[in-house]
Length: 299
View 1 (cartoon, rainbow, N blue to C red):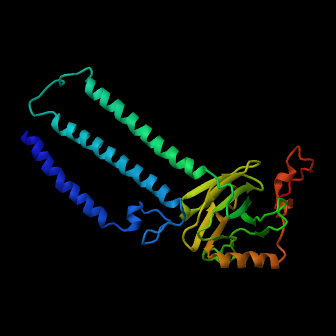
View 2 (spheres, helix red, strand yellow):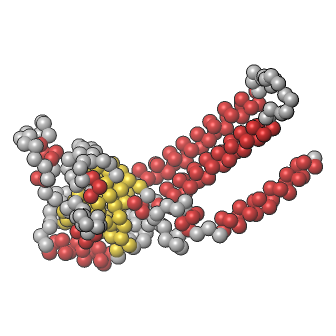
View 3 (cartoon, rainbow, N blue to C red):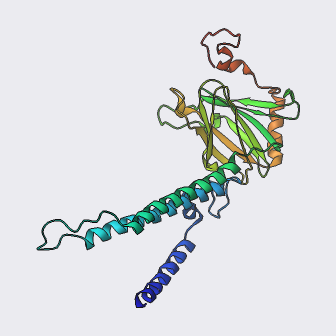
């Protein structure tokens, strides 16, 4: 009885200390030092908070399991160590049913819990917006990106587009010319759906601060739906090894006001970059069975 009372009084200060420590954490620390958040905790998209929470909660649980396991190991090493004068082997037990049940049930519960929360969040992330306010097609190619901003017509005759080149690297300093990188413009606080396509090999579309990436498969379209919630410029890159200049397959994302976004689309129209983006640059046209000559030429 006394031991339980002592344990209860020991737990209270520990709990208070944990609460105080967490209260003193910055937004960056509370989100596991992950990108995508400002100092005041504002996420980059409407999905960023959910992804970060799943990540940090998983690590907290795993750290708790680790501390418990390490503590039990240390306790067993100290308590059951060989004392001076002892010889032979200690008493051998074939099994202990409560312990057997404990270390069978607990891992199963943890695995089911991780699966349930992951499946829940994945379902939300993979549900595509059928009627987005902004629709974009992103083409991955060796080793850059093209972006087509779709409009209302089925033949994309009123769409606009931009085509990019791979990162231009200064051979002396290794710095990348940021102004030369392809840039995807998105309006803040509007639903976005990005259809992901490859012109040649497998690529992966990754906007780092958005905490999510999706692969771009040959002959199979992928999509990604979200809402940008904070204006700013975000770095993007290919996250799938795709050839010699994979490291230079970079792009930027600019989340801007609706007025600035419309002005950018108008600038593309003024430059004559209208209609469906040219498929002539796609190596997929040379695939066997398409009727096109397989000349091995790419973009």
